[in-house]
Length: 169
Image: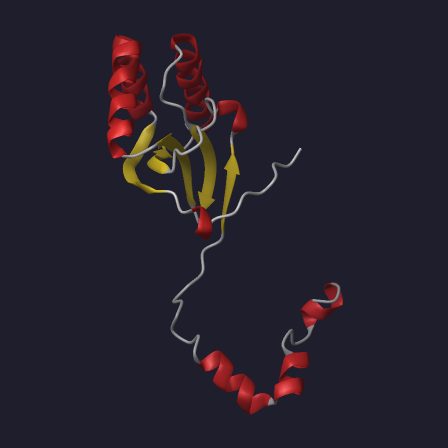
């Protein structure tokens, strides 16, 4: 794209001229049917709502996806700050990063918990339960009162399929 004026013209004109329309049609034919639809989305790291950073070698993740009730987004964000506060006070071994995600019409908070592997994750969660005690249960009940849907995903982080980007100021 060579400036905004090119958005109003055929973006592929130069390539078509170079290889010909027939070759271009063959090239794009391989992509037909590979996507039924496209949904716009954004993910923003909530650095102020996150607790500490992963240690070197912590390539395993447990991801919590929280869909807030409509109108409860601010309360959900405030509750993430409460989680962070209690984890900091108790020096919890369970660190996390929080992300604000819009995917199509869905608004989702994603919380990623790092560990060395599944056993290390369970050890951290168990220690966290013991450290936070009754407070953890109260916070989780409050979290569920603000949430219409949630689910967990576990697995290995794949740095070769990812990239880091700088945070906007």
